[in-house]
Length: 267
Length: 275
Figure 1: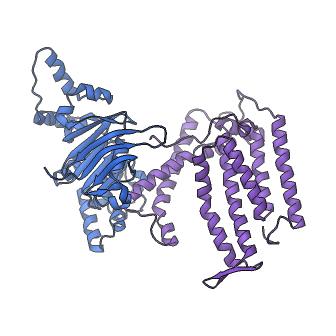
Figure 2: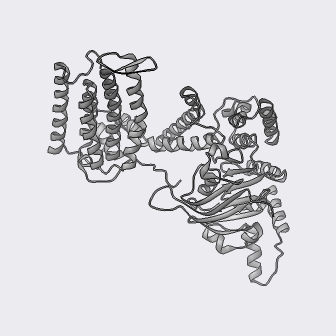
C-alpha cells in the first residue's frame, strides 16, 4: 500500500554511511555502556545531542527521528515522574499529593529517560545507514555464523513490515469500535490485547513463510559463502571507534570519581 | 431520491508529502446500493474506502458519513455506521472462540448485554456460523475466517458494510458463498461496498461500479453501462466478462446480441453457478 515504507535504509554518503558495518556493530555496546556507566543527566544529554546531530547529518528523515524520540518520550516522562516517588536523595523541590519530589531523584529520572532515548536513537541511526547485505557481511566478519547473521539482519529488515502489519491491525480494530485513546492507563494497556494477539500470529506466520521460502531456495546448504564485496577497515573507522572508546573511558573515570554520578550506588 | 449515506466531495489524499494518491474524488453512496470499487493495485480503491470509514482523513475536501464530517469524529465512532472488513481476516481476528470474536465489536460500541446477544445471534445466523459458535477461530478455514470477519462487522449493525477483496484466496465455491451472503444482506437493505479485481463477481452482484485508475475515478455508473465501457475498463487494466467480449465482437460483425441489464446479470450468475 502506498505510504507504507517497507525498507528502513536511507540512501546517502554521510559519515555514518561511510563507516564499516563492523565499526557500527562494535559502536553499539560502547555507546550503550557509556550511557549506562554514568547517571548524570548532563553527560547523557551530551551523548544524546551528539547522536541527534549524527542522525541529522546521516540524512535520517526528520520524521523518523521525531518518531523515534516521541516513541521513547513516554518512558522518558514516566521515569521523570516515577523515580522521584521512590528516591528521596537531595534537597526537596516540591510536594504534591503527599509525594516529596527531590532534586537528585528528579535529575536521576531525567538521566534514565534520556538513556533510553539515546539507545533507541543510536539503534535507529545504525539501522537507517547500513544496508541489509553489509549488516550480514559485518556480522559474519565479526565471527557470527552466516545463518545467524542472516537471521539477525532479517529481524531488523522485517521491523517495518511488522510495523505495517501492526498499523493495519490497529486500523482493523478501530473500525470495530476499539477506542485505544480512552480509559485509564491499565484499561488502555488491556485494550492492546486485540492488537498484540493478531500481530503475534501474523509474525509467526510471516516467519514460517520466510523460512520455507529460504529453504526452498537452498538457504543453509553450505555453512559459509563467498561475497561480492569485501569490507575495508579505514582510518575513519579507527578514529570513530577511538573517539567513542575514549568517551567510554572518560565515563568510567567520571563514575569512579563521582562526577558522572547523581545518585551513588544506582546504575 | 433518498439522502446519501456517504458523501465524498473533492477529496485529495496523500500518504506522503510528495504525491497525492487520490485526486479530486467525489461520489455519493445511497442506502441499499451494492457498489463495487474496481481498479489496479494502487489505483486508490482501498484508500477511498478507508476515507469512508474515517480511518484516513482527507487532505483536502470532505467526507460526510450519515451527516457527520469524518474529520470531526474518531474512526471508532464512525464504526457505528460504516463497517469495514479487511482483506485479510487475520488482521482482525483475535478472540479464541467464534462467538467471542463476534461480540467484540458490539461490546466496543457499548450495546446492552441483551442487544449484544441478539446481534451476535443474528450475525451468526446470517453468516451460517451458528453451528461453529464454540469453535476456535484459528482452527477455521480461510473461507470461514473471511465469513467470521464479515459476521463480526454485521454484529455491529452498521448501515453500510465495506468488504475489501472478499474473494481473495477463496476458490469459486468459497467466493460464491461469501458473495451470496453479501447479496442476501443487500437484499435485506444493507448498503454494500466491495473492493475487488474479479470482474465476473462485479458483473454478477454489483448494481453500481466505480472504476479507479491512478487515483482518479474514470467511470462511476450502473454495472451494465460500465461493463461495455472498454475504455474505462482498459484504463483500470480490466477486461469485461467473456460473454460481453463475445457479444461486442459479434456486434462488430453486424450481429446484434441483446445486452440488457437483466440478461447480463442472469448470464453471469449462470456462468458462475456452473463454474
